[in-house]
Image 1 (cartoon, helix red, strand yellow):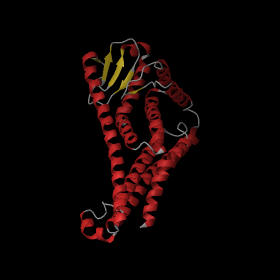
Image 2 (cartoon, one colour; image 1 turned 60 degrees about the vertical axis):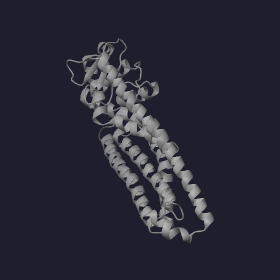
Image 3 (cartoon, rainbow, N blue to C red; image 1 turned 60 degrees about the horizontal axis):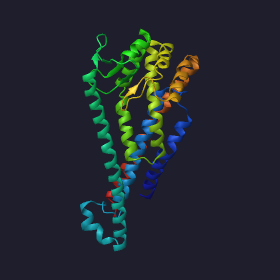
Image 4 (cartoon, rainbow, N blue to C red; image 1 turned 90 degrees about the vertical axis):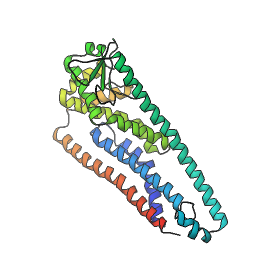
Length: 316
């Protein structure tokens, strides 16, 4: 029993404190962004499972009030001293209050983000027109070049007339492929869940680093889709022309308002053709390692937490 609890705590510490720095050191541009995204998602998910398991174990360990649920009142309570019961009850209440505070703080942020996106879409229906050539594009009559996507059932991509004027037809198509990749791969939902995770559990370094790193990785993944369809040089030209485009809250745009992130994406695209068979072999190996890590990062804390909670429910 003690080993299970220690294993659960060790899993939470390793994933929550060590996984993020290790993933950061492995680099972002060397590997395919999809493999890095899988590793980060697995690490964040595993951290949440492990932390939830630690909280559950703390509440269910005797003589905490959660131990044995209703049977605790009848059978377990008389076996523990009064001081132990008071101490455990106080600690459990503090733990529950902290968890409730974090959840209460995170859920309104999620609602505000969803509400902001809804209002943004409603405003676009009033001021934007439908593109005749592309069934999923809305056009804003504005000289500033902007291009971004919002999660919506129809007309989810927004561009300005300035974008069409500034880009060549090939570059414009590359931008549309980029935004469609965001929508197809559900990047908006992933960022929304990451924002909620950071609001509820902001302390682990892995979650803090994921919030800082994942947006760039998602842009790189969409860059790869556009580069495969339209060519890396074409996409680089479009990104450079859109470099001054303003960012839109709650949206994913082809050009990042962060100049450093945009420069990193451009450098990665320009060097994508080098490496040959060795690069392909390294990419395949990294994809296998990433899938293995992501599976273990989720499965290990899940198994340990389930075993610990099952053992605690029968312990008194």
